[in-house]
Image (tube, rainbow, N blue to C red):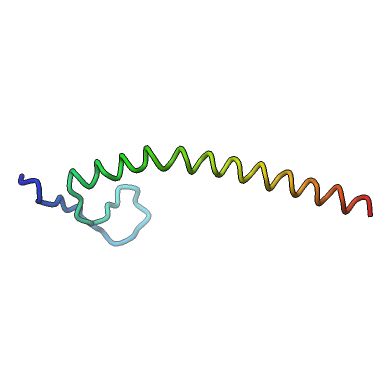
Length: 70
């Protein structure tokens, strides 16, 4: 298979079956690139999410505490 050839995955009509596959052209280089981007972006995104949750929890607890005192 040449490097520029695409692998076509068969797309079935949506159903309840768990083995349904979708069709999109996926080259080996594209799959490697997506995996590499996932390894870089996912940990950063998870850390940002955790920090955002901590910030929201602190602000909500301060809001609830402030409203209780009124």
